[in-house]
Amino acid sequence: QVQLKESGGGLVQAGGSLTLSCVGSGGTFSLLNMGWFRQAPGQERDFVAAITWSGAITYYADSVRGRFTISRENAKNAAHLQMNGLKPEDTAVYYCAALSWNSGRLTQAKDYTYWGQGTQVTVSS
Image (cartoon, rainbow, N blue to C red; front, side):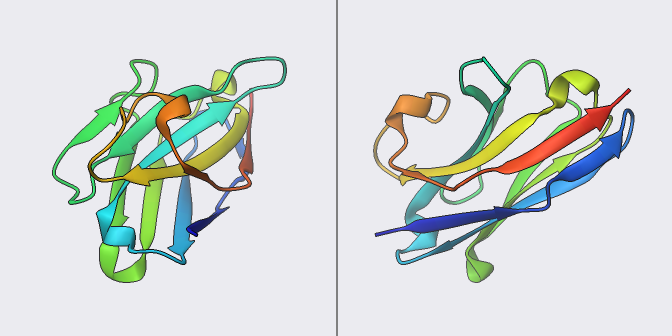
């Protein structure tokens, strides 16, 4: 059973930066595609970014492309989300998620098997 734990959330002013990290345990991390999703109060959980098991391919939501960068370090069982140019509308709980390398669509929350507990990101104006 894969377990994921996020860290790095917090309060930042608009225009600032944060880096979220997700550390996995209990499985073969290098065989997992990884994704980041976010959920604001009263909203659905939205796709933010994803990276394939090898790190070769990345995907981004239009709203964050050019500001956020997803990466991974398989040797450390870790995935990261570098967030620059943060806006108040980026405020949400951010979730790390994983699915097997050979299944599912990386941009669809319902296809992910494993989820972290989430970390709050708040961007003040």
